[in-house]
Length: 299
Image 1 (tube, helix red, strand yellow):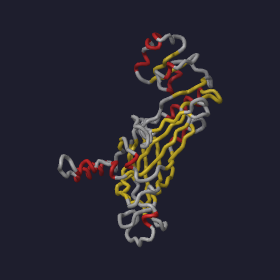
Image 2: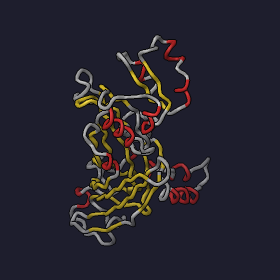
Image 3: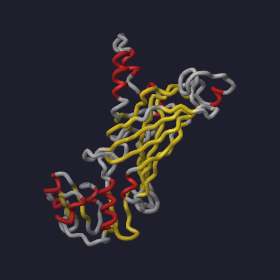
Image 4: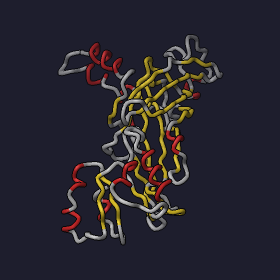
């Protein structure tokens, strides 16, 4: 937020929660004295440091996004500032945030590494590590080539209009296998990422999208990986057509043709963390279903 304050506004208030905010010398040395004021405070306690008139702010800018978008739970603080100080019709930047989900294959896990460690097969260790990830989310860079499904929209936020209680949500999504696949693939879990938009609603001259997608250059947010307790075998209908399959849906003998997800995200009791509930259902080309155990992850 400190560098954002260098933008040439008539008057700028920079809210900074870190200790650097206690020293205004950097800003004064850049001829911003009387133009820029820095407050060392949490948003909810800001009025203890400086007086701000209600609905008097023209533009609200914040880099509030965390891993899986909502880790650190700072969005509610941004909405608090919006409702308290932003003028009617004032700009909030970014003004949109969208979460996506896709299924990942073996290449996105550590299994290939452990299968050949300087010529030694240590896959038993790899399987133990993979089992740990069924309880603990992993933040890592996933490459698009390691996804075995197309992306699906999970949740869209409009920061200009959303209510604070909408930060916690439950949504559904359907994952479809990549149509170009010619054989069944194991889906080991799902990967979550987000885009934030500086749309033409407030940035008419140069709307911009910040993406953390596996299909774009990596960012420090990476992606958030949730691993199934048991992988789901998945294949396009073109591969499954005409075959007489027996066995449980989602196994290699009877691959699913899609995966239905139910995902819940809620702020956790632990400071700034979130809980993610993941429910997966494998669906056959004939509509038969098999449900996977519900998994709870804390990030």
